[in-house]
Image (cartoon, rainbow, N blue to C red):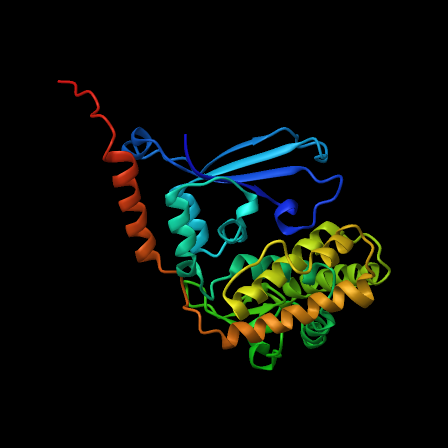
Amino acid sequence: MQLIVKMIFGSHLYGTSTAESDTDYKGVFLPCREDILLGRIPKSNHLSTGDDFSRNTSCDIDIEFYSLHYFIKLACQGQTVAMDMLHAPDAMILENSPVWQTIVKNRNRFYSKNLKAFIRYARSQAGKYGVKGSRLNAVNQVLTLLKQYDGDLKMRVLWEQLPRIEHCYDVPSDPNGMRQYQVCGKSFQESAAIGYVAPILEKFANEYGHRANLAAMNENVDWKAISHALRAAYQIKEILSRNTLTFPLAQASFLKAVKQGRIDFRTEAGPVLETLMDEIEELCAQSRLPDKADTEFWDRFICSTLEKEIFASAPQLNHFS
């Protein structure tokens, strides 16, 4: 396997490692000629000393190397792992190459408004722990309306009365042209029975409200997940405002305190995450970044790199008659 880069990753990169943190390594490799010609290029190669039944310790290591093709795809999608790798400082790089240096030199060609992976993760954690009370209020507004109608009626009978507010809005019709309405990420067709929709929203409201109350008391909060959500939010903000990422993160001390559960969720962690999400939404709206990455450039880069690094010096395969 021809590595083009190998680096220290995870909490050691972010500056949030503790005495219990394991060691993560990431890298990118060039596929061999045979795998390219046979169309069987692997996405990645992975090795871990831990297992699926216990938590990793400081003695464990986790190694994952991505093929060049797959890494470029991840980076064009704005996936967090690729963005982090692209901004790793020299102190974290264990093996380097001219190919990787060229990728880093052109990393701005990956930048776009398509930061869905960062935003999706941060939003999911914010929503999971009831950061935004407006989500619960939105669900309750819809439920109040639904309860005024017979459960056997279809959603279309009250379609025009449905609230169009934050977290509640129309989404594109399905392939059959059926109108759809979304409530806090849950979509419903106009043909759905009110008696079907209402119980789903009631369950969501009950669970969401329960989690929000627990979070307010710092109970059953997945502090590691919240620290990851905050980290992702800080990274989105830096990309959108400064067109770069800096490691270790400036907020590393705060993130480490959150990860260790030393921060009050209701008065500190929750409000910070909520504020960050509001800032990110505004920055996304104002951003001058392109809508998508420069995929044409990266397609050409992959082709030219493989021609130079793999095919130009490779011996001819044996031919069989």
